[in-house]
Image (tube, rainbow, N blue to C red; front, side, top):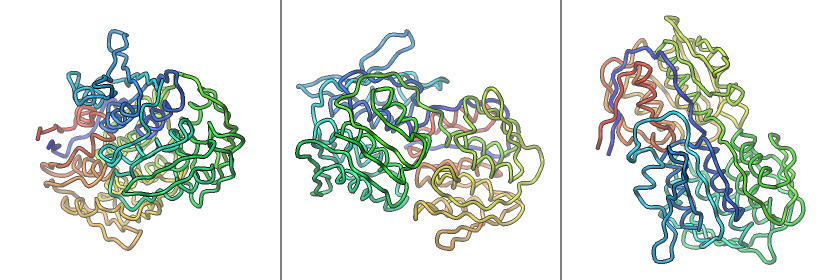
Length: 458
């Protein structure tokens, strides 16, 4: 199993290209199930989660092609004994670990064609690896009227129930039962529009119900919908495919169902979580880093917190410039809340930054109950953090010390990288497969800016 080795104490200086957003790319890929025409997606990141979902979509009947360096389409899916699949070697290539493993700026372009849905069964073996795989439930119900989908897996950061997904789909007319870890869903005469109000703005439930509703008969109103930019990216993709959606970007979505959707070409938005992560890394180490392709409007709350901490944030025509030279970090309290507030996916990274602030900072986590698992690993590096239920009090220290640490989930793993960049001596991070799920060639991007970081093959 691979590890990341780094030696702290080096400023970051240079340019980091921001990749397409994983959290946008995944629902966009799933949207290909809604039409028998090709959906072309540009700016896809090279990540293991992309490859995992591609394998699942292939088993459902989606043909997947990649635009190669010669501007020719290459088919990745193969058919064996009548079954469509995407093999391990092709999956590695999508994840950036194949023959072209060296980092190359600029995302992949995929063409996904679900001419025929060959299966409505999403197996536990794949869905358990990544929570977003569960979002195939809505599109399969909308197009086929039935689905058999494993309950999801993914990072162990809380119970993360799917009750809002199921309640919303039941409002649209789906009959749902749970059996041996699977959601068995069907409809009698197809889905029909309904008024749905979520008790909380769930990103996953909004994705799932939105994709089901575009093919439902009549009008659907989703109240208290999540407003994340990735949902806007999906909604605009669906409109490009022929869906009728009003209120995009707001907490109220009105969907008028259509009989069918057609193909389209859509770009994946930039990854605001990756951009925020590298901004915090630059703030932690000091230096001067430009995040090209980053859109500051997508994570304003995080940039405001960085500025309050004493990190200089400048908007440029290329993206965002992050600088800090010698000034001590100021402690800043944050509360994670749904968009547009401070994102839970940047809480661990900001905590790492605050471990060397001049004073105490309070982190309040309101989204996931188990999202402080990185605290014990930060403590191995010398961080002082005390937990009080949903609050963590971070007492800044003068210095951190390198040590062996272990990643516990995707965002927690990169917080250890940020801390290690500033720690004295060597830090090794194990279980970095978490990193590979959401950060495209992180070690290459950081080393290009002066970090002493490398991957140690397992």
